[in-house]
Length: 231
Ligand code: MN
Image 1 (cartoon, rainbow, N blue to C red):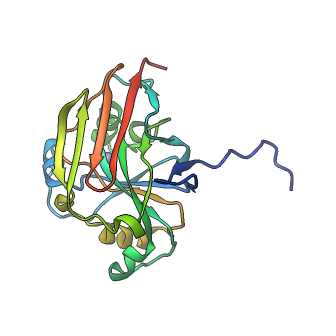
Image 2 (cartoon, protein in one colour):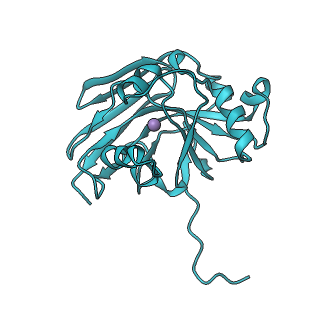
Image 3 (cartoon, rainbow, N blue to C red):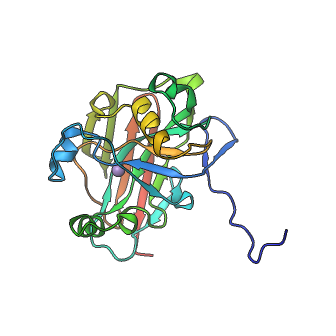
């Protein structure tokens, strides 16, 4: 077998307190999974079925890295999120067994070109260019379930330059992790290394060059991202 081009190196994310890393297969994201955030985006938070979008695996950024202000936007937003990492694949996974498929959890920041996303949304076009741009998925070190269990309540908080902008509780998730894993697995076969960004609470807002954005989740620590000048 000869490839015309060298295959891309495997994207990966850190594991807490370990030199090992998790290879990233796909990044799924849940839209509007906290009622107050759905309202701030001008949408009804009724418990309609969850919907998903994706980011490329090579969009991952680790804790402490600088992200250059991305091109083609004047409204880069932060979104604090709990990230679930699939360790055992499957399809048509029952909700009662769904947590057995999760290897661990991390703190995430779903960076968003809000102007591009909203223009696409309002025209019924795909969200890819608003959500799936280069270096748009900040993912902290993954904590194994064997050490942190399955977080389903506790603080999720985001600050910009030390000012708190998002302050909520994981218990406010409209769709829980087992529900998300089960529903997603009806649409696509999940595999080890699939990441699921579970949605952001209210309080989303802009980042500009020079900002330092910190996200923390009870039991999972915190991650920091500095926004650099436009790349
Ligand atoms: Mn999000």
